[in-house]
Image (cartoon, rainbow over all chains, first blue to last red; front, side):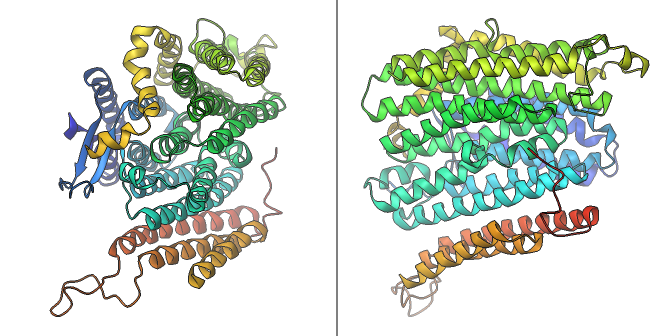
Length: 510
Length: 112
């Protein structure tokens, strides 16, 4: 099993190169290659999740440890990595399926798939590597590919959004690199597990590194004070890429790394937990409030992403606070479970919502909700799946979003943060509000005769099929709340974060 | 220590440039200055006073060596920086063709 881990990076990276060479000669080579590759990776991820509960380690180069010091570059797959691998593979595959028809409007179709594969390679690389400098390298691969993809349409707005994204992303990368420099300076190692054993003293340098990391990865994850680029970049990108950016990228290269380093690398501290919880609460509220006033469909969804990421930070942050104060570990575990469950769910329904917005834009060539309306008559599949996703994100019972929000709220009450629980409920109501607005002005509001006269019809088969599969997953993922299924997927992830010190012991093998 | 402080000041100069300049090219230069300061910082981390290059040669088997790992990392970071700068400049050229200006106050089709 261990030797299969590099495949997650080799498959997308290799297909990017093969596409660049062979795609010139064979028509539509790239789009089918990446679909096959991702289908294979979905299978591999499911196999990893079902087969083994223990942490898988692959040492690149195969160098043995010198005593306690790891020399090889590590790739580590534990429970927390597995859920990220799951969302990258599943959402990535469905988005690639959707893109088959969607990208026919672009002249440089081949380049779209090359950049898409590179972005996937970067994201897989970030989540599997157990070495902080490698995380930086893969993060830059994913970021640079996404900068180029945001500007893919080369219209005025897309170029401007891409420039803004690149400047803020560039500043974030520099802060992260500087933080890595300080880490290397004070510990003399780059391996996450080894750093964790070396970093014990709570000195001023440690605090400075923590601040650099929170700001750097916070910019990548677009939590509240650092969110300025997200609504522009996510609404200007081609819709499948918006689904990938909002659904997966901000989680894989932002949130994953923040949780990984603050749980498993740094010692848990009350201040950091407080910062994460407060930033999460603020982004939850402010993202929600800003989303209400939007009339651009994809901009509304982008602001909603900020708000929903706030829920993830809130859930995990409360867990950190309880752990840091030596509270009841069961409550902390429950809270972290809620946060991670919401992270999984958000990838699914926000991906679906962006694909739905893309389907509307593909047929009507506008995403201004003031001009839309009555589309449920002419595009029943898009309207139905988008409605399912809206219900899921607003937290209506049979869908997955309800269970994750409920777990976060219950955990907040159990941990004694009643105000935060109340705020989460209020933001949930705001969420229902702006999604009702989006549904009403896009799909209902008139009889759709305007669109019928313009001969607007349902989107092509692959796009509709990808959206139906995602809607089914939105419903099916509520099964993850059932204890026996939860123990397979979510509990190992929570354990990986909860047993903070265990990570370095398992990886180095002491 | 003075070198580290100078390096940090260089970083701040870059950040200041990114935040206050209105010209796209000057913003890009600001990002590049930040990058150079971080590269310099890594090299300073690996520097050992009075040490030799980390290559085994006759007569220098014992002597203190400078740390080669930050240098290897910086080579990677320079290549990444090249890609970022190239992409930034190409987007800036495209923006100039669309808007006819490098002034960010006039490039404002995105609002809200």
